[in-house]
Image (tube, rainbow, N blue to C red; front, side, top):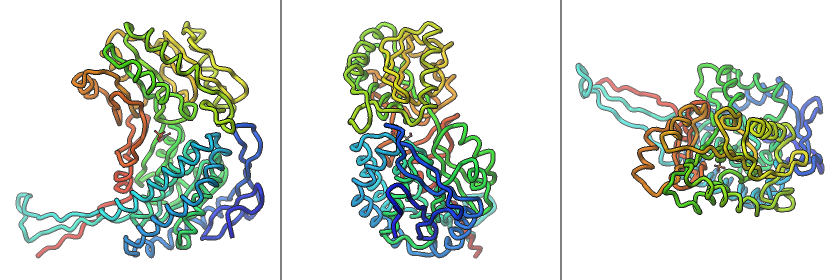
Amino acid sequence: MTVRQAENLFYTLLNNKWMGSGSGETIQIYSPDDNEVVGEVPALSQEEVAAAIQKTADVQETWEAKEIHERSALLHRWAEELEKMTDEIGEMIHKEVGKTFAAGKSEVERTAQLIRYTAEEGLRTQGSFIQGDAFPGATKQTKAIVQKVPHGVVLAISPFNYPVNLAASKIAPALITGNTVIFKPATQGSISGLLMVQALVKAGLPEGVVNVVTGRGAVIGDFIVTHPLIDMITFTGGTATGKHISKKASMIPIVLELGGKDSAIVLEDADLNKAAKEIVNGALSYSGQRCTAIKRVMVVDSVADELIGKVKEMVSGLKVGRSSEDASVTPMIDQKSADFVTNLIEDARNKGATVVLEGIKEKNLLGPTLLDHVTEEMEIAWKEQFGPVLPFMRIENEREAIALEKRNQYGLQVSVFTNNLENAFSISDKLNVGTIQVNGKTSRGPDHFPFLGVKNSGQGVQGIGRSIDSMLRDKVLVLNF
Ligand SMILES: O=C[C@H](O)COP(=O)(O)O
């Protein structure tokens, strides 16, 4: 049995069986490249989802009871199986979400490394031992053993932009710590997610330990996040959906990786060649459809012309086209997202921004657009474009950048470009974001670094070690001698 039932029909994994929905209903997935159908996945009903959750809850104690080195060994085998499927999954990522084949394969390779690291890091998870006598009135006769135990059933919801990597970065930490998993992939990217789970089945996944629920968000979305057998939620996606989930689900831990409006602050003393290269790469890789993409540049006026000139030259050399043509800037995930970006560009143009470089617009394929003299009145200064347009805001000095940053509704990352490290530290102290990159583009990796957003960018911390922590709670055993 395999996930693929016919050329374009894929089944989901329920209790280690590849199944369609009882109704036979499916959801079609279209390629961003040419709008052709890539495949279809089952549209499960609430009853089918409930049965999957029940089974995943039933097997959790047994999974938790396994020795951790056995769970670790499963993850190692998963990484091996995944690597064997690199071409197949890389190709599917390419078709489903419009990354190039090379980028799809590199996502699979990165994921295998992440799973291996998680398999090792999980082995080092330890509790602690506390003597009672540090607190007035208590004595050494009272001792606490603080154990780390899993939450139970983890609901992992992944986004379209890393359908394999951002799914595994939730599933692997959940499994190593003894949680079982309900995996809800974003519809676009769900076949890639299912193929990734097929590698896990080949590795020896016990029945029910991971169940995958595909379906329409409108039908099963609220149902899963409010289901009483879900003990923890880890979600990556848009801020509006993340906030909705956190309102709906109550009394359980939730980790949210949401949107960002990451700024690059370029100071007078920066290495402008390096800054330009990092900005272009940071802003436009995968056409800017990354939470960590650089989404606005604040540049000191005295070096703005030079920086923008360098950026323009580099961006002009980028190939714009389909992901099947190995282009650097490829079609956006759907027309709605492309229209959103186009409207932001029009708003800025109408309010007086200078269009330094105008990208082509062919349906959902947008060439990169560079906007100069962007001001606070323009929507593009504040809204997350999640696409290939980069606004430049000219500033007098770093104080102005810090003031603008304080009003950012998001708080994921900021890049500071300067040759004065002391100054970089002092700016960093004043920024309320998860991560500050000095002289480098904003990005999540290396994947064992803590990764977090504050304000509307999220809650909780990820990155391999912290993701493992998020899957565990304390359980305290007190010895009263
Ligand atoms: O889209 C959100 C991802 O976590 C970004 O990851 P990345 O920085 O590796 O592209």
